[in-house]
Amino acid sequence: MNYGGGYMGHKYQKIVGFIISITIAAVILGVMLARVWDDLLIAVAYMQHLYAIPAIGFCLLAWLMRGYRYQKILRNMAIPAGLLFSTACIFLSQTINLIVPARLGDLVRLIPIRHEYKATVSQGLSSIVIERLFDIITIALLGLIAVVFIIDVPDWFVLLIVISLILAGIGVLFILISKRWTTNNRYLGFVLNMLGDIRAASLSRAAIVMLLATSTIIWLFDILVCYSVALMFNVTIPFQLVLLAIVIGNLVKAVPITPGGIGTYELALTATFEIGRVSAADATIVSVIDHLIKNLITLIGGAVSILYFGTWIIPHITDLVREKLFHKP
Image (cartoon, rainbow, N blue to C red; front, top):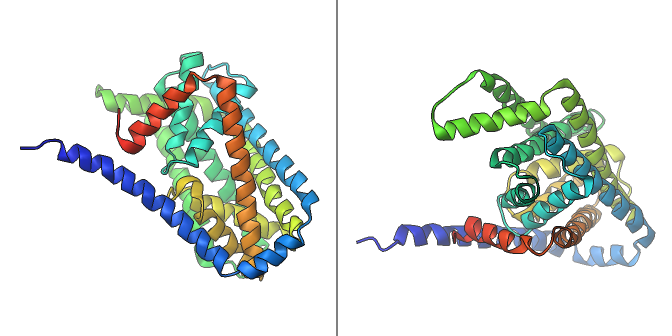
């Protein structure tokens, strides 16, 4: 007889997967730091603390712009969200993404927009897809610009950027042609309804211009955070190389191997800096501190967002994480 072995096996697979992803992140960071530890201590001793101010400032501006973009996406779906609300949604979901793998934290956004504006699940998922789609398109386009000005770019960098653009293009084409399809199937109907929400909110001429413009500003702020961190440690890195590093780091981070891309992001940035003949120690410390600043602000913003929404949201978040990670409804 079967006493739920399949259920228990599925449950523990998720737990083991979570532990493995955390371990991978820790091992990557440990190896990176261990190989240049002595040089890192010297770099820390001579850091220019004042450059932390623009780094934090640019990071906060990037978050505010993310909130503005998400507000526009929601309003294109007739959800009248305010700027603080939309920014808090982003902060909250990204904070959960630092804790759980596979970007499951994105689903947390559905909780406040359904609670406050009675948004449908289709609208909530569509808003996330739009944001991710235009992020990939924008950073890939910025990456193509960067490789023009950098010598000896590895072929796999270019391949990664081109593949990302092709996949994004296929996604857009699929969304456009899906308007011709009809179905009586409940589940396929939900998918078609979601694709319709995406088309209406993001693929008009005005929406495309707005999303590309705001996404470009967001990623330029993100690049300036990293550039400021380089200045903090007296490391000379050309702006176009920082741009390429952020592009590669975020494209690699898009594959949810570890929570929040911790470890894989730093490794990608370090590898990119080293092709520009930046020393291993300098490349490592800039990569690690850049991600540390961004993640710390994310965590603080997530905590403030919980206070903004109210304590009612905590059990909803807990239930969602338990269900998706530990398979406990």
